[in-house]
Amino acid sequence: MKDETIICRCEDVTWGEIRQALEKGYTTLNEIKRITRAGMGRCQGKTCQSILLREIAKYCNKKIEEVDVTTFRPPTKPVKLGTLAGDNDD
Amino acid sequence: MIKKADIVIIGGGIQGCSIAYNLAKKGAKNIVILEKNTCASGSSGRCGAGIRQQFGTKMNCILARESMKIFETLSEELDYDIELNQAGYLILAYTEKEINQFKKNVVLEQSLGIEAKMVTPEEAKEIVPPLNLEGIIGGTFCPTDGNVNPLYTTFGYAEAAQRLGVKYYPFTEVTEIETEDKRILSVITNKGKILTPIVVNAAGGYSGPVGKMAGVDIPVYSQRHQILITEPIDPLWKPMLMSFSENYYFQQLPDGGVLGGYGDPEHEIIGDNVGSSWQFSRTMAKKMVKLVPILKEVHMVRQWAGLYNMSPDAQPILGEHPQLKGFYMSVGFSGHGFMLAPVTGRLIAELILDGKTSIPIDKLDIGRFKRGELICEPSVV
Image (cartoon, rainbow over all chains, first blue to last red; front, side, top):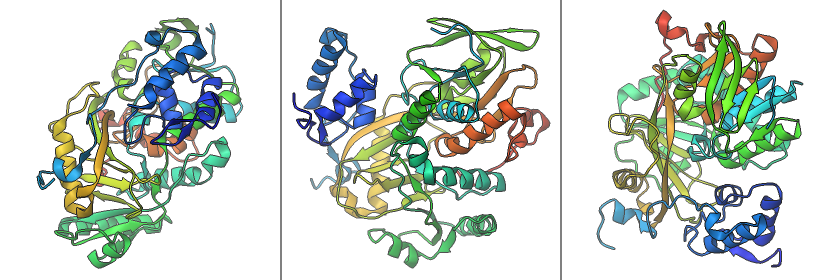
């Protein structure tokens, strides 16, 4: 994979940034999320998390199921503040 | 794992990392940080990112002012961009009582060199154009308050400390603290035992249980506080919006997302639960949409929670325990630990190595509760 390949489309995080974090010793998905913002954007990691898990597993010589995922946080998909606040014009 | 250390710090969040960095910077060796999860996995990485100097007691103003001075050059010092954004704090008043308190605060703040001033509702609207002024009768504004990226700040301290020789052990949980003749002997973890004469309790939301391991009763408890963040949007306004009586704080961060929370001490869960509740996001959305109506079209993308480590007077407990030599505490920050960490980390390091501090923190000792000398800060959310 090229360094300039985009891994997280919401936050514009490239493979180069992920690779640098891994090489610094940050080999958990949580740490990589906190350091690079991968998975913090609008889709909340629905796109990039599976790629990140695969690459962490490869880097650490682990099976993909041995890599911990991050906490799933509400909401499942983005919700307008106006809807949450009770404005049902949506 | 290392078998012997000069100083063991329990907790690898902002307090622990700032203390370790400052100790190492002053020349201390053989410093170990023990973190049961990973760096910034606790409340440091879950905080609201705001840093302010507007407080109602002289001591808090001085500590916050000195912390801000450190934040201003911290990216260079740590060689890690912490994304300092001095966009100000606009604290809004809804009652005459609040205005009177704010007037006192501003006199105090200005006497200490903090640039806060009173503002009228019209001036507030100039600072934050999309603001709905309903119910607002005034406020205070300090342009040098702001926010930083709390994750980058914690990682920055952790990496800088490690470059100075500090050993950082993630996934290392302390299970026991051995003492003898009112002195610290060793710390036992899930990965082995470390002999040490000095332990620093910087365990944030878990500082009470860590105290118990050493046989020390620290009068703190932990309570959940929740936050939500929206999708990034075009810049709408700059400063943090905050109210003590209406109970909210929220701000647009440099990347465009709007982040906010409120305190709910009567209903929120006591303990270490950091799950999320739908009641929070509903209530917070109502507060945000009322104050900045244009936000009703903006999507919330995530919510999370962290722990406030509460002390009886909502002030930190700093210093060595009087009945246990070598047991230092940097706990009970009650929601202000992140913003104070640069200065308190430096002061705890001074206390451990020199036995005295450049800013007096003796009033923040654990003995104040027995003496009945609680410190009452009027300006907290």
